[in-house]
Amino acid sequence: MGVVGVVLPNLWHVVMVLLGSQAQADREECSENPIFELGKEKVTRLHFYFHDIAGGDNPTAVRVAEAPTTNQSSTMFGSLMMVGDPLTEGPEITSKLVGRAQGLYGSAGQKEPALIMALSYVFTDAKFNGSTFNIVGRKPYTKRARELSIVGGNRVVPVCSWDCTG
Image 1: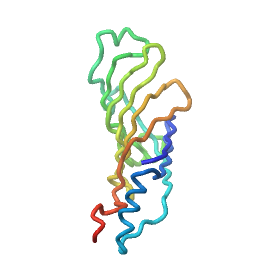
Image 2 (image 1 turned 90 degrees about the vertical axis):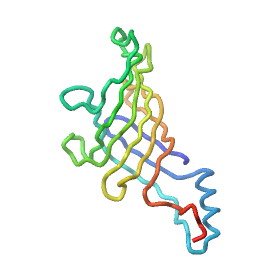
Image 3 (image 1 turned 180 degrees about the horizontal axis):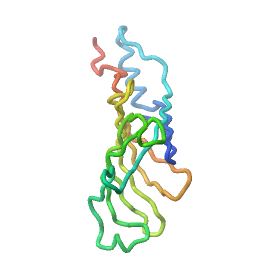
């Protein structure tokens, strides 16, 4: 995978561009097959809302571990949350569900509030049904602009059959 950006207020705007050595290797391997031709690289823009609900009757994020001192910490340092957060088309939780963010995050900042996150975004709607991307990184949640790295994922429509002989 190559260059990708994620901006994380409550609205996640994702821009994915396939660049780099793996995409080039796939292109070279499949170009030997006259039946299979790769098209131009595409930019996909996804707009969705991420809802992380840590309390109430139906939480989507639950604490699964904590350090003995977590509850005395102003940053909740040492807490670990497991999540299955809804991704919706609009800002309301009742808006159309387009997927789920599944994974975990933990409070890693002793002085500054910051999370370490490892999440898979699993899409369930229309042409992206079954597609995923995976993010990992540090999220200082008091900052207005935050970025996390996309480290992998898949698209349901294969770019190459991996057996490029037919």
